[in-house]
Every structure is written in C-alpha cells, then in structure tokens.
Length: 290
Length: 290
Image 1 (tube, rainbow over the protein chains, first blue to last red):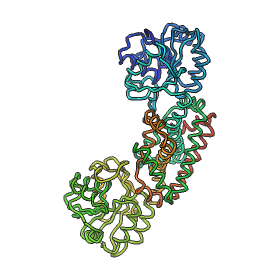
Image 2 (image 1 turned 30 degrees about the vertical axis):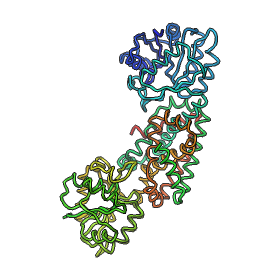
Image 3 (image 1 turned 120 degrees about the vertical axis):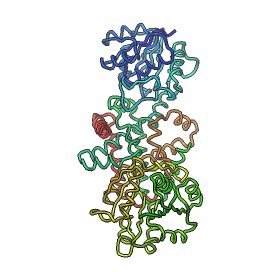
Image 4 (image 1 turned 180 degrees about the horizontal axis):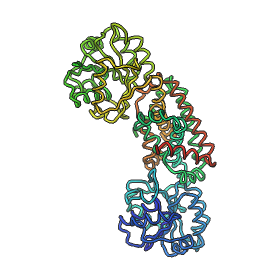
C-alpha cells in the first residue's frame, strides 16, 4: 500500500531511514526535503532518497503525493511542520516523526490529526544516533538492535492499515519496537538519554572552563585521560541544535532528574570518608549487574 | 641487574604486570603474594608468577630476596606494607607501587625510604584497569598505550640505576610514562579518573534507587537504555574496596571536583530554557574537539 515515502529532514536519522528502507527491500519511491541543500545532495548521492523538493512550497506539494511522511527533524521543527501539513494531508496518509520528546508532539497531533478528514499521526522515536550528525554519517544499519519507540494516539486496538505497514517496515530495519504513553516516554527518556547527555555536557564544559586556557593542563588531561574520561564526556560533542528542542519540550522531567543527580553527587561528596559510600557503590554495582 | 621481582597483590594489576614482564622478555624470577589464595593460584596458573609466599611472614622473608618489590594493592594497603617493608629492605632494593592516589604514599615513602640504609621508593600509577578486577581478568597487554605515571621523590636528576631499569621494563609493556609532582597528580587524577568514577556510581545508584524495586520500570530502562546509558554507568560496576581507599586518601581534590560538577549541573538545570545552554554545549563541544 505504501508506494511513496517522503522524508522531511535528511540528516543522520532521515538519511539512515532511507538507506534502511532500501536495505530492507522497500521498492517504492523515497523522496526528501531538507533546509540544507548540502544534506539533500549528500542523501541523494548515497541512495537514501531518489529525489527531493527544492523549497518548502514544493515540499508541501510533494507531501500530498506520499502515503507516509516522516519528520526526521528536531522536536520544535516537528511541531512547526505538523501545523503546515495538517490542512494539506488527507485521511489516506500517515504522518510520523522521530523526535526525542513526545508529549508536546502527541498533544499537537491529537489536535491537528487523527480526526475525520485528517491524516493519521504515529509519534515515533528511534533511540539511535551518533555524536556527529548529518547525512554523511548515515547508515542502513543505524537502527539494527536499537529501540524504536512509539507513543500512539490510540493506545489500544489494532493500528490502522497504513500505520501497521509502517511498523512492519521499521521492524524490518532490525529495530525492536515498544509502545509507551507519551508522558511516561518523556520521563523514561529523561533518565536513560537526556540526563546522560546533560551530565556529559556538564562534565566536558567544566573541564573546558578549568583547563581550556591552560596549555600545560590541557596536554596533561589529554595524556592522562583514559577510557573513563572518554566515555563520560563523549556525548559532550552532541549538537546544541538538537538538544535545545529537547530541553525546551521535556524541561520538567529533565530538571527533576538533574536535581536528583545533583543531590546524589552531594551525598557521595559528604560521605567520601563514611561507610555510606559502600552503600552507594553496592547500589551502583546492583544496577550494573542486572 | 634485576633478577627477581616480587609482586605483592596478584589481582588484575599485579598479575597483568607479571604477564607483561614475561611478554616483554624479562627472564628473571617473578614471585607473588596475595591475601587471597585463589588470586595467587590463578596468577600462577596463568604464568604471571613463578611461585609465591604462603603467609605475610613468608612474604616479608621473600621480599629480602628480590631486587624490585611491586605493591599492586589499594592505597591504604600500600601504606601498611610500606611500614612493614621499610625495616626489612636494604639500599640495594627498590620498592614501587601502583596506587591511584599518590600524595599520602609519597609522603610516607619520604619518611620510611629514600635515606641511608633504606631501599629506594618510586611511587607509580598505571592508568589502566577494567570494571572487573581479579587475576582471571589479567592480560599482558593491559598497559599497552596506557599511561604509567610516576611521582618520584627526587624530581630532578638521573634516577638511580635500579629505578632506571624498572622504568625501562615498564616502557617495554607499551605504556607511556610521565613524571608528576604528587599533589598535582592527585588533582589531575581527581578530574580525569576519580570524578568520572563517582559520577558513574552516583548515576547508577540513583537509577537503582528509582527503578530497582519497580519490575516494569526496570524492564523498560533495560529495553530503552542505549549506548549513552551504558557508557555513563559502566564504571558503576567498579568495586568499593578499591575506591574506598581513593576516597579516603584523595578526599579534598575529589570533593572539590564533585562540588564543581554539582554547581555545573545546577547551572544547566536553571538554564534549560535560556540561551546560556548554548554556551555550555559550545564549551563541551570545544573540549571534545581538541
């Protein structure tokens, strides 16, 4: 039933989706749009898309011709495009997205879609990425063994046929899928993804402030720092452009986990010389041994 | 000149040292001692040591017969063994260690060694390890491309011959070496090693407290958590036994870095919706791009 898929946003996630569709044997047409002509050209030359729209008006026209439109863009851009696409699409079409925070998207989708005369909307969130974005880093296997979450507007019951077909394609990427309530999704993702990101950004920013203008110190940090430092600061390379939207749209759950971590670090600091430190290591050991 | 090396503590670091000595062509005798008979047996069966002392009194006797004695044990145990060995060893011998915090060890060494009639002492710190310890995880290549730090008691001048020979053996392991002042060593290691450890322990302990008794939540965290969570909590598996000594002997530098990180996380939390977040990402990006 799906003959044409339109990917809006042909960066790392969008271009990888195109490549994964091809690798899994999807034989229909894949078209794209991106605000960056460079990303579009890279996605096309890698075979992630067959063709593309050259402007936003062209993109809105092209959207009318695809059964599935994938918004592979940051959360605020998903909200913007949802407003633009709602009056353009019809009941025979499905809009889906890959945004990292889902409550605001699901709320907007309920208002704009999922009603007579309007397209369906399946909020989605592939838990995959790299610290460097862009179509040039895309790969067909990006989603293999990764989790692709959905927060469907209708929690129970069989999904509409187009949605079922899209889910089958995603499963073909080698991704595992799980349906979650959007509020619960955002709380869980604050813990497993957004907090680790902010933690890594905080540590890397602190080290840069402490040693950035001290050439000898910088050289020593670089010489001495091993796997522990590399791994805990790796996400420090992540782009602000993507995380700004997550911070703006998942603020409270993220702030709650940050505060809890600040308090836990303070607790460790106040107990560096007491047996309570043993309890904290025991808890951490238990978490890692599960 | 070095014909016999005595490794006290044949866990991960000690047994790996024995294996690395063999791999690098050291043809003398390697003997060991460990409080755990199991670790000793494992180290011997892997070829890390040729023989061993069965008790502390036997170990003190054996120490008299080796040119180099390596204390591959936690920091407080290094301090204990230094007291025991100081009156037993003589000027023709070298004591060295692998403890992760160096100021207290260097201070004790200056008091107990490095004077007429007493053995030499070269405080050392290989920046290598795994989240699981024990002789069964030992490998000859553990120190390859890792940093093996020294905090020599005499900062300037050519090292005594035995010390120079030990340094050559360590270089033969494939390790890079760097000499540091012990106070500076402890501050740098608080940043690149001890802070990342406590951060990882704090995050893993917090997650265990939050989801440990919630079976559904635990399953969701396990299903959704990807590389970001794995890497930032990996060190949560580290053993308390080793880190207790580091927390006790490097308390102030570690507390200083912990407080700075708490403040930085609070700053991020208070700026999740302001342009200041961009500055923090820019700093972190700069640190990672160096």
